[in-house]
Image (tube, rainbow, N blue to C red; front, side):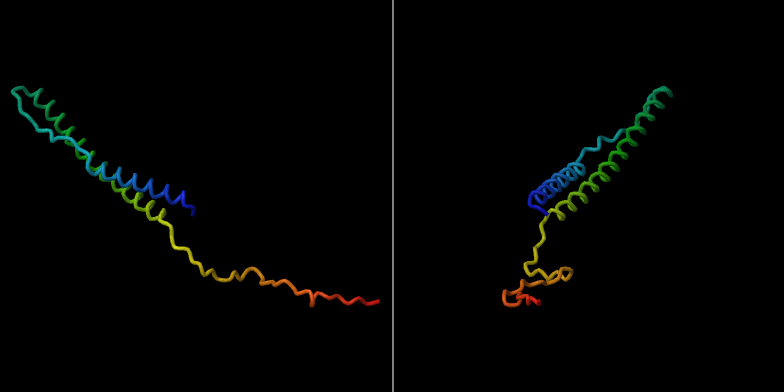
Amino acid sequence: MSTLKSILFILVGIVSIGLSISCFNADDGDYVAKNYYGGDAYTGIQHAAAETGQNVRALTKLATKGFGSILLVGGLALVVVGIPSKKNDNKPCDETKPNIEPASPQTDVVEATV
């Protein structure tokens, strides 16, 4: 893997981890309280709006934790992939290729027969 690819993987991984932290720290809104009014219609409308607000808040918490987790795991994976591994200097002999040595001039003598 080239050095440029390694650097790009690490940078994208760091950005992904940063975005996951911002997802975990995102504001999920304020709690919506139920209020009671004198008339039935106003109380019912307000309770429906408060219930909707609480459901949206719960969904926001779920979505931010889910996306934050995905970004965190993906970012860590990219950083690990981007870290270059040690290269082995003692390369083993490739057994699929024959080991052919050049012949010396003394053994390349061809006898002519007439």
